[in-house]
Image (tube, rainbow, N blue to C red; front, side):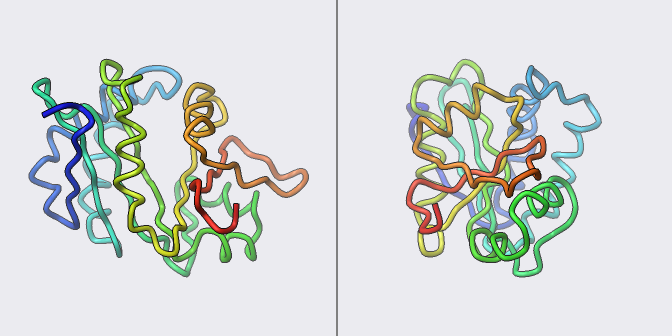
Length: 184
């Protein structure tokens, strides 16, 4: 299987691959600019267990002879916009009306991880295309750190558009809307 070949799993079926996904996650997010420690990496496995219960949860992964080259996870953002993790920063930047109009009910890309050896081969592009293929009304979004300059440049190169923060509200995250998102 070439690294561009992708497989999509819905719901809890992905838990059969939890160890392989955790290994890929650690490979990607323990390195700069993320520098996640062992506990934060372990928390991904814990989150994956609960995330699989979210409405519309899906995972897509790319696999080769080397194993899982990369993966993405996503779900439908609920109408009651969460307040944990980075959601508070997103809400502060966009305000409640734009959060409702742009993000709730849309496909939320939670994780996108491509191992270093699989970068520059279209793996991330393929993962994003597959996971967003059936996004409700072409509405998908993700957020990333402003400090991850290579990641930010990649999303822009792939046609994702930054949802501009309200004046004076920019935080450490950037919200990106998918290339065909009607609110871009």
